[in-house]
Image (cartoon, rainbow, N blue to C red; front, side, top):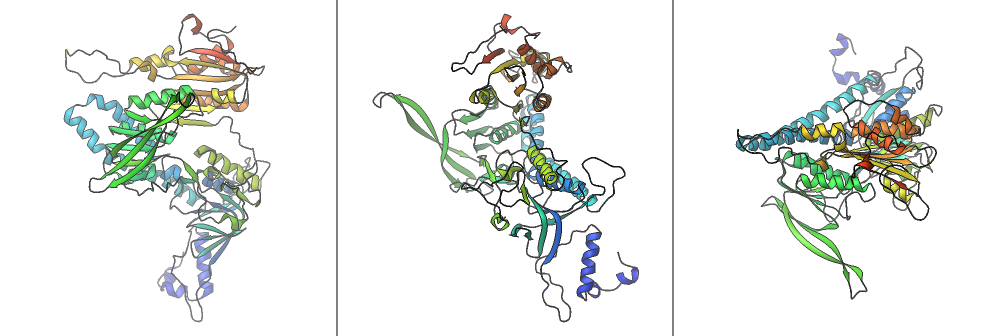
Length: 605
C-alpha cells in the first residue's frame, strides 16, 4: 500500500535501489502476496549486475499440493510453523481435484441420471440425449474441478497470515503459522535446499514430499493424448462420446471407466484383463458381482489376454488393436500338462484407454541430493513413520510411497508426518486395518478390512456370513421400485421389472473365530454400499466384539439391516433363518486352520 503521492511516481522509481527492491518483496510477503519473479525478468540499477537467486527459509517445505501435501501444510499451520507448498501442476488439490476423484465422479453421477432416463426416451429424444450430453458432461466436470480448486485457493489466502487462537485448543499452537504457495518444478540441491524454477531457492528444516503418482508409461503404446489416452486425457481428447473403446487393464479404475462410458452411451467397450478373473487377490463374490455388472452394461471383458499390436489410422480417426487371448488345454502327448493356445483378434476403435496402473512420481526430484536412498526397484526406503531412513528430516505421504493409492490414506499420512516432525505428543500412528474403498460400478461395491481369501492365506480361524439383499427390505424395495419403460396403452410387457436379483447385491462379513470374535472385514455390493463400510471400519479399528453391532439400532429400511443380520447369523440370533430355506447365496461357514479346513453351511452347531 502506498500513498497517492507515491502512487503517482513510476514503478521504476520505487525499484531504483536494492534496498527498495528488498522492501517491496517484504511488503508483498506481509500482504499475503506470493511473488515469484518471472524467468528472464531482471531488476537493474546503476552499478548493479544480475540479481542472484531469491532465497527463502521455512520451517516446513511441502512438495506437492495433493491431498497428502495440502493436509500436511495445514497441519503445519496449526502447529505455528512457517510453511510453503510447491506445486508444479498449476493448481491445488493434485489428481484428487484435477484427475478422476472429482471430475470422474461427476461424470458417473451424470451417467446414472442418463441410465435412469434412457428407457423413457424414444427415437429423436434418445438420440438428442446421447448426442448432446457429452458437451454438458465436459462443462459440468470442468466447473466442479474449478470450484474445488477455488475453495482451496481461498483457504490458502486466509492461511497466509499468522493468527492467534481465541481459546486453547488441543493439537494446536498458541498462534498459527503461515502458508505460502510457489509454482514450479522442485529439485533438491542439497539435504536442506530445493530449487523452484530458475529464480528461487527454498531452505527448510523439514520436508514433506507428496508428489503422488503417474500412469505407468508403456514404451510400446505411448499415450499421445488423442488416440491412446489416460483417463485424465479422455475428457480433453474426445469431442463426442466415444462409440468404441478398448480399456487396457482390468483394474478398479478400468472397471469404473467401463461403467462410466457405458452409462454415457458408448455401445462397444472392451476390457483387456491379464488375469483369469477380475481382482484375483480379493473376494471371489465381489469379482463375480463386478463381472455380472459389466456384462449387463454390454462390456466385453477379455480374460487372460494382452494387447499385442496397436496402429493409428488418422485418416479414419481410429486405432487398430490386436488382442491375444490365452486358452489352456491338456495335452496328452505332453504328459497331461496344460498347454497354452493363443488366439488373436483385431478390433478398430476410437480410443485406447490406459488403465494399467500407476507408479510413484519421483521424476526430476533428485532425491539422492537430499540424501534419500531407494532400493533396487526404485522404492523409497522409509521407516514406520514414512520418514526416509537415510535423511530423517524428509518425510513422504501418499502415492509416492507406492503402496495404497487412496486420497484418504495420503491425507492421513500427511497429517501424521507433520505431527511427528514437530509435535510427537499429538502424533497418532495411522492404522490401515479399517481402510475403506468404494468401486463405482453399477451398483457400487465397497471394501473394508480383510477379505475371506486373505484370512485363509493368513491361516486365521474365522467365520464367514453372507446375506443377499433380496432377503432384506431395502433389496425388495429396489427390486420393485424400478420405473417401467415408456409403453403404449394396451401394449403387453412380458418382463416389467428390469432389476435382476443378482444385481441387488449382498453383504458379506469375516469374523475372527476365537473368544474376541472381532470383525476382520466386510465386502458389500449394492446401492448404498458405502454407507455400510464406515460403521464396519469403526468396529474393526476399535477391535470390539461384533456383539456391539448386533445390539445397535439401524435405520429401516436400509442396507445396514443386512450388515446387522450377518452379525446375528454369526452369533446364532438372526431373524432370517437361512438353514430352514435352502439357498446357495445366503450362508454361514467356518474355516478351521488345522491342516484340513472344515466348512459348514446352515445354522450354527
